[in-house]
Image (cartoon, rainbow, N blue to C red; front, top):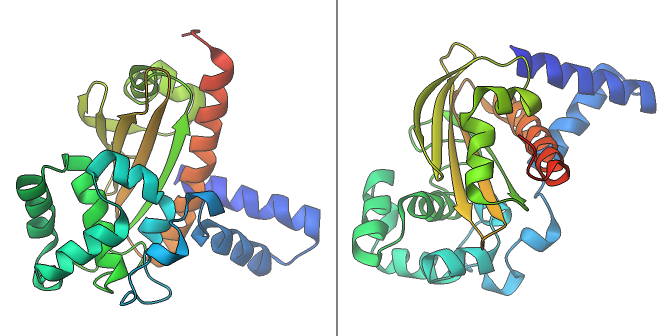
Length: 243
């Protein structure tokens, strides 16, 4: 797989710089992928629900509390308390997401985000693991371009090849300018992309890579998507209106 070759190349590059063994360099890169994207993106410590396990809530570390509040009307702690009051720890993933959408009018993508964050915080799934036991990887970036421009970077084959080279995808659905779904490199994995406008000239993209084989592949793909979204951000923000 192209992503595996890319990851191994990064391991070799680190080996050359540090003199580490392959195993040590690889472990450092995987551990780095598991860290939060930035300290500023983490919710304030006092907002963490007291019942949450210390190692839980990788989702809350990826999405800042103020952004969740702006998009859903509540912060993480408020959502956790509300779902606890409804005894949602006994619900399926689908039921929680549907409840957020129908009872609290949370948009679909953000209902999923809150659901995953709640499940991780309550120990219903490990970071990178689905409720059913499978694994997935995710990454997100805010890019200083309009949402439609960001959508085109995924949906347009020529534009996509500029920052995601040597990867074959089979598009399943593409709904401008909000979502993009595709089978990845011939399957069986697939990507789900959500795009959310942040004003007229800025948008946030979130990539979920599903149906992975295990924690190791999830960590490798998490590192890969962080790297690729950083490349996409650099390309679009220096490209201006160039197509």
